[in-house]
Length: 240
Image 1 (cartoon, rainbow, N blue to C red):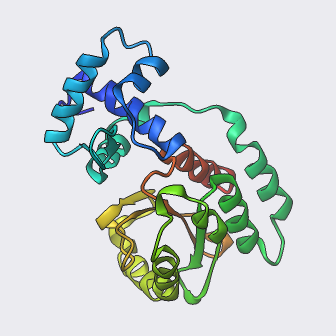
Image 2 (image 1 turned 45 degrees about the horizontal axis):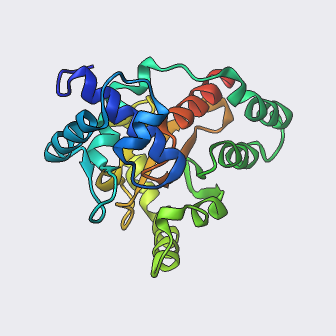
């Protein structure tokens, strides 16, 4: 982890992100004190909130509210915190069972993407790098359930994104040499899909014996990065 944040600030930011992932609501200092044994007061947390806000990691949606993470906060979280955290193995059991049951199936790729969408509670995408027309997705209904993305114009925005997302797949394919086979996380304005600055995208490849398949998880910036990264790592390991 770099030294951009103090240990206390990193703990507060991590805890706030985790709570925001669960609730989709602004998080107040009192909530963090109740949920965690920090050993410091709500006033101290509020002071750190102010500092984190000045640094661009938090924002206050409206007067007298708590704070929510920014794209910068999620990027810091993914780059510096997630790697050192282990999740419970049972999160992958259902996904692995679904994948194993469909290995060898004529429609394996499609089954894999549906299973990934179900496990992540986001939308999952899949395509092969030798045939851009072979593109499919599952879990659209999961996007429609996200509370922070509700409101006027949301359905139109999602529809516009889905209408052009297959065209934007070419960008992924063209940059494949640069990305290699590592898992990549695009957050907010980094997402290479037009109009998707309010979302995040995790993208990777699975073994070529399954058709050089690219897999991705697409969801709000509040997605559970820790869980989703392990889901993708589990798929890659299972199909090695």
